[in-house]
Length: 297
Ligand SMILES: *[C@@H]1O[C@H](CO)[C@@H](O)[C@H](O)[C@H]1NC(C)=O
Ligand SMILES: *[C@@H]1O[C@H](CO)[C@@H](O)[C@H](O)[C@H]1NC(C)=O
Ligand SMILES: *[C@@H]1O[C@H](CO)[C@@H](O)[C@H](O)[C@H]1NC(C)=O
Ligand SMILES: *[C@@H]1O[C@H](CO)[C@@H](O)[C@H](O)[C@H]1NC(C)=O
Ligand SMILES: *[C@@H]1O[C@H](CO)[C@@H](O)[C@H](O)[C@H]1NC(C)=O
Image (cartoon, rainbow, N blue to C red; front, side):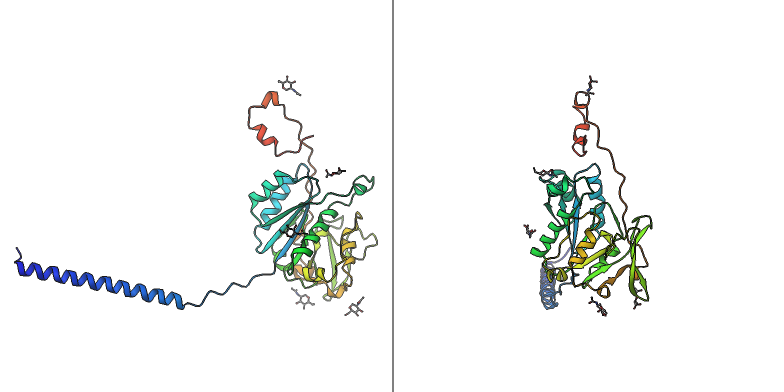
């Protein structure tokens, strides 16, 4: 047993010990806060030039599948705005639903093809309204960076996006699976463009595929009249010509001086529309929900 005096001494030293402990903790906390406040404000990380990806689309059996595939490719690319532009008179809740699910920053606009081109017996200039609408967006809303026409039915190696991001004027690179030549590309000899390799030249100055070039936003701003013509087969050529003055020597060569294929004109097999669902038979099943995702005859 402790004597009374010993008990009091013990309580006293315990009190002192606690006081020292609390005081030390407080001092450390104050010093830590001070240390934090002295840390240099973290500099904003170097921000890469923005990319504007213009994707024309239209309602068809494979539309949602294509947008899903392209969207998840674009999801690997930072500082990118996806301009999805549909040839339609009304917005599609299913397209919006798909874009929201993917989660890539996007803008969704409508740009119906004018009737005069729609009713032609000849090849239709598909996607031209859409792409010109994308250019309108860039003229109104973009000040720097680069834009690129990325159709929803192609395959893209994501490294091409990092390469095109630094385009000063116009950059070009090969596109696989174009025409019977299997590739459409500038021909490079001694580091210079000496011509174009494409199964169909058709009198074009720039016989290139839509997926084979990117343009700087600043370069577009300096050419207020540049736009894509409603001329099937000549959309790329017409647009690139409208960017005049554009010297072949100004064109930046990507994909290791056009020695690699990083974009492919895949073209999905055309799918038939789904046959109508018999609601008498299946009206109380999951097939009703699934049916909303399909394009029916
Ligand atoms: C949009 O409306 C116009 C005029 O009504 C029509 O001719 C055209 O076919 C429609 N376009 C689409 C994609 O539905
Ligand atoms: C510019 O951006 C705003 C905001 O996203 C958008 O509402 C507007 O339609 C854009 N302008 C054009 C011409 O697309
Ligand atoms: C491309 O070619 C140019 C000129 O011949 C050369 O200077 C450059 O290093 C090449 N770049 C690559 C990535 O091969
Ligand atoms: C294109 O550039 C080359 C080399 O700089 C120059 O000789 C030629 O005159 C230019 N052509 C045009 C149409 O500006
Ligand atoms: C739908 O299914 C019912 C029940 O089997 C059948 O009587 C009807 O003919 C079917 N309707 C069509 C349009 O095939």
